[in-house]
Image (cartoon, rainbow, N blue to C red; front, side):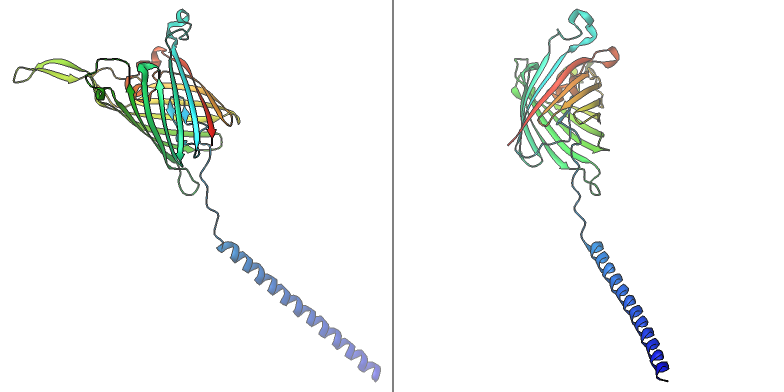
Length: 315
């Protein structure tokens, strides 16, 4: 009798131990599930990292004959050297524009505070001095701003002797809104509407007379000239880019309407230098003169060769 009782008691103990182990396993799983859910909730409620503005939409403050949305970092000093030869439509007789009178510009830029560039330059044509400023209004940021927007303003004063009654007659002003987007690591585009203002314009007699017998004088060109520029960059490697640009005049004047500008170039860049080789129609370099006075027609093969060289120092 006793062996039977002992054997039965042993089976009961084994069953109880099995049930206890199953219960403990289930309890442990429940705790693990709750812990995982808690950690997941913490990750969900954690604040996401703030998105940063995109970098290097363009490699330089210049894209051929136009400014870009780029403003260097604070306390950057930049030296610009720009050169334009004559048009190559004269062929071999002037070595395709290389032996024709050229135009040269020296520019000095500084970034005193974040997002603001100021500068001064001197261009050979009419000994034109310029003072200019550029401010980054918006920077392309994923999930926040789809484009970068920068304002550029320029005041130009020719200092060669000319037939001006007053010094104020010489001034020209240029305002441009630069809107750009970095589509991918290799492709960026920019659209830039602009307005050029000239204080003094030439006039001509229309042949009509007023009721008082005076001859009627009409403005040959408007004081204000609107235009728009389209630019793009295609990155071939870390140091080589293709640049494209087209400038379209919008304002229609009575006479002397400027021609559009079509330009392309190669850009070679390092950490502190940018070199651009250019083929285009603009020769004046100064933006107000380029937009208001351009007489080179790409349909007549009036292209010219030029280059931009920039050097930056960070303090």
